[in-house]
Length: 173
Image (tube, rainbow, N blue to C red; front, side, top):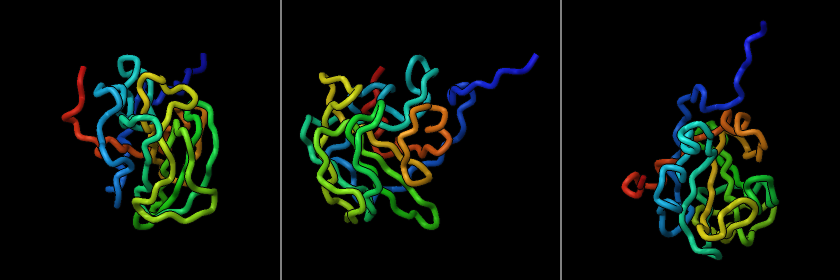
C-alpha cells in the first residue's frame, strides 16, 4: 500500500526564515488584529493544524499601509483568500523578497511602479474573507516575487516569517 503524503504544512512545519527588518513599518501602529495567536504567521489556526501565511495587523478600514522597502510593484489585483492586494518585491542581499498587502479597500499604486520605503501602497479593508468586525492588514512575505497560491502547502514552501514585525506583548489567549 502506498504511503499518503500530507499536503498540510502543519503536519511537519519547517523552520521558516525570518523576514528581513523593514526599512519602514507597513502601518504606523503595529498591533495584532485581535491580540490572539491566530493573527500570527505559521501553524496558528485550528489548534495548530492550519497554516496562516502572514500576520494580521489591526487597522481601521481606510488606514494607509506603506512599502517596507524600496521596491517594485509586481501586482495589483484580487485573489482568492487575500481579497484586493498589492505585491512588491525587493532584494535583501542576493535574496528576492516578495511582500503582499492583502484585504485592502483601495490600492494606491500601479503594477510596474517603483516605490520608496514608507510610501503608501494601499488602504486597509476587509475584502474577501476578512471579518468586517475586525478590519486589518494581512501581510505576507515570500522568498520570491510574491504569488497568491491557493493551496496553503504551496504558500508555505516559499513563506518567510514576519512575526517579528509585531511584539509578542500583544498575544492573548
